Length: 447
Image (cartoon, rainbow, N blue to C red; front, side):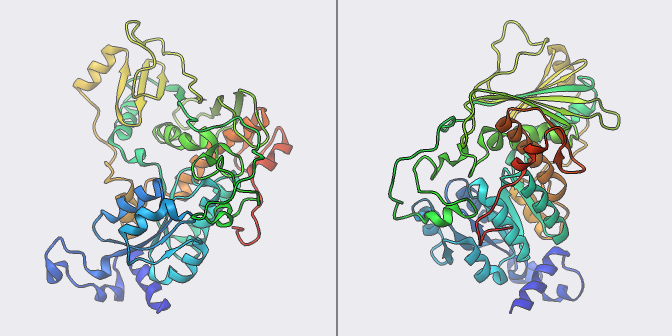
């Protein structure tokens, strides 16, 4: 049975070539051109099905040619709604058990857990021969990002990081405008967010609480060091704590930096400077400002990218109309070029400055040189079937982007300027800070 399933995965990944093609029954024989034959169906498991995980499950289930085949969550209360929607699907608390019991029946896995469990769950799924969709940020640490990216490359499996806005048309339009030269060479990018919208800048809580009956706290901790349960950690406010989350930067950085990372073809930064409100041993600060420096690329100048969180705002560009309030609603990013600026938002059309440039470009927009996406989930499922590479696949995109984001947290935690040697994978100016690039995993949870 196991050999049969492995052959099926190979068949799906290779696009129905060779002898495996004989197992396909034409769609029209089984019920018309829109019918999906069983041999085309991707069987998907889900690790973490409350909150964003529920969105992932429903989004994948709503696409043709998929079947939700296994579910896992450590919190039965948060998982209850999804479990009820799929009463005949096997459920688990421990994703290690799900993978041990169900891998031979699955083709792919969704991972939507707290950040500290992303890499261990995704790595185990790859080891089991499964395609993986993992929510952002891809990992909890820089070292995990590098290891997971390398493992995904070696596996040849289809991977995708869940930054849904990467699939929006506006991102492709923004890149086409920038590459048309409408605002000239881009040398600065400014980003800002209202995150954190959860508690941060706190000391470790000391009050004693009983673990809720519906939660398996040991499995929730997973690879993290043991500590007593506290509602300040779970189910949601884990984002503000170093052992579990990656703060405001980790939550929104992969969304906002994605646009600049892709549109400007950025890769590893060389230097990061951080300014923050007071820091705490285990909790991220209430607000921070970071400057990332990226080197010049072929035909493009060096770029300084400035990140602000905690409701800190970027200054308006020089060409911003004085009769309009700043910052404009719906925008969280501005590309500053030699000849103007481009405002970008996750769900708003790009806006150009000055107004005359915007009017000229909108009247005669640049050609569409980048394929529009079918959606973040459909793009991944297409790759699972061997139809190209997903847009935010781990090895060449998600892992480098996540690494860049998380290096900012190293600068935040250390309150030092970080000089990054990407080739060596180390901080060159302050070697002691390299300890922040990784974390230890409890026995039984190592990558």
